Image (cartoon, rainbow, N blue to C red):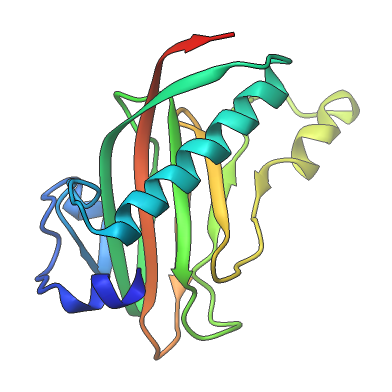
Length: 177
């Protein structure tokens, strides 16, 4: 997957989506998975199977889901890159797949913000502070699935080595038991 991504010519933010939220990174158009390359087919299957297993687990079902990939893209992040707070519209689930995290201990984590907003702080809402955000550890090959409404951002990446991430937005149109 990394070889395929690096073999493509990409300039700036080709998606032209929310360019004001993205700094010092390259972003492909939102059609990355529209390919017959075997590695793309395998990646889509891995993500769809993982989402299906997650949905069966959280919804206590044993269903076969029809996962539709609405948009798919990749980022190549350079030194001092980040992607400010955002959510994904027009889909129900999203995925981030760390192809290459770049330099270790150089930041670039994906941070998820708690969607529960409190208008009052006291001892009764203290639990909200400890769960104000979640930062999954960075690891090459790690897949993160999350509902589209979760606000998230890529923290500042300060590494020299390129950081490569594949992402996609998905809808689940139907399922069968």
